Length: 192
Image (cartoon, rainbow, N blue to C red; front, side):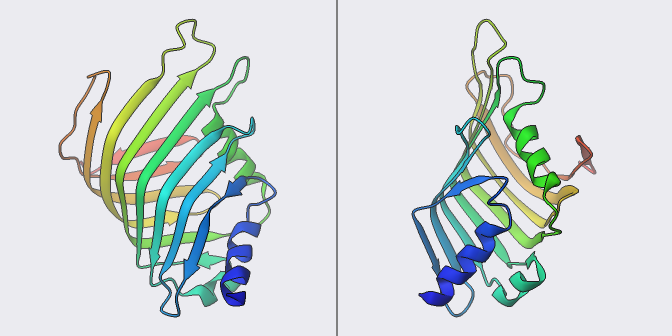
């Protein structure tokens, strides 16, 4: 238990000054399988921006944490909820503000995984400057990706499978494949 607590503290301390992170349970076995239940990340208004009911890292070489690296073979997220808000009279939405706070941090933490899956995801965007204040909601998205790389400067991964449905019926995607890259506030999709 002592070792699990130290690993948890190390993981959380990397961004604790910049991000409000909470969770109900954290378990790690000697083989590197890690389970986190009810992971909650709040934005700068103390509103939930990311919630994950169950987060699993498989075969995490935890000794790499001391070199500011996380490199699990597989990451599974179940019941992922992302809520992005453009608050009244603010230039950036809550996700961009979160990314900017992470980027201001002086650490060079690297996160990469061979396989990354999301099951039963929901994405909500609400613009409080819009008079209607009707949120845009994408429900029931799931995807499988590989070669996830996350650093202070960029996020990239290969999207192998994506399924999405939306309340607004603007689009329904049964299958989609692409390379995703986010860098310098730009998203690039290629090879789809």
